[in-house]
Length: 191
Image 1 (cartoon, helix red, strand yellow):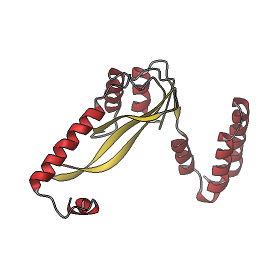
Image 2: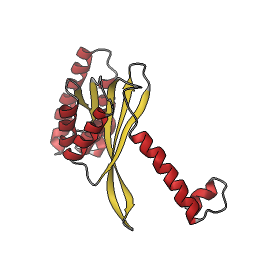
Image 3: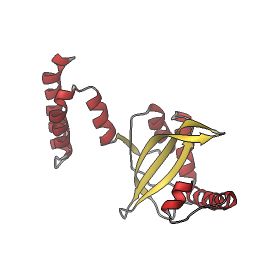
């Protein structure tokens, strides 16, 4: 804590000052996490992901998962919709997270992007009926590179990005088919 306050130009804080600051921050965080979403929505696009990080709990450091959802409303305004800490990324945790967002007024969602975690995809379907799910580009690319030999990464990445650059759906499908053909022809021998 001393390093943090020194970066703010403060020489030192007493334990009671730190406690008061933490309590004040807790109130701001709680207000943010429980604010109504209906006032700035509807959010037509939502991106969801989980971040694993080390947290201090009960005097020891453990792994925790932060579930995060970001939304874009009809005006193009992007906003963090929610953040929830869980012990692990499970379907139940995602379901609770999305149920809370809906209870706070999340509505109008047409598309959700995320990784392909089964529990996450199921929670989206259960809580956001009518919304379409799609694996996000970043996770798709990471999954593709995980099964691609390193020597082929530049070519495969280039072809993958060329899929994203197509002007219409028919061109996207045609370029994606070319990517699949390339991968099958060039990389199948390296298994």
